[in-house]
Image 1: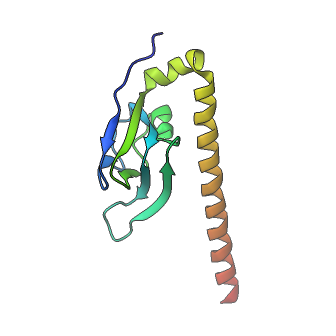
Image 2: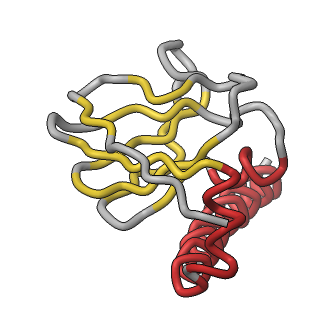
Image 3: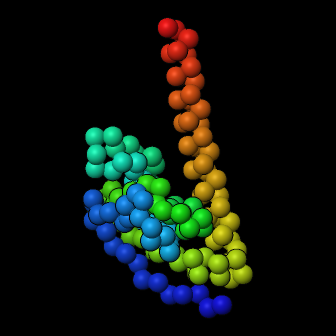
Length: 134
């Protein structure tokens, strides 16, 4: 399978890459420069920054792989942010044409999962401790 040539996306601060619950999950993104914020409830009073990603990070891979709606909103955090879209078809081709890239994506996903798990455990401990003090 031939790897698709994809042009990069240039973004300015505040540009939204995709919205939480979007069903267009045909690609993930490779950050070439700049930074991206992943937000829960973006643009509402309950907005929460889940992660700040920088050059050589990836995002959108879980939704693309699972085929589920976007679980967060992705927003450029600075002018000049550049992304390379990676379609599901291109990603599948990486298994034979670019296995090191697949490993890098998996390592990135694993690192972010560990970070979120640590945050979750810390929050659970805080809630438990606060409850014990009552």
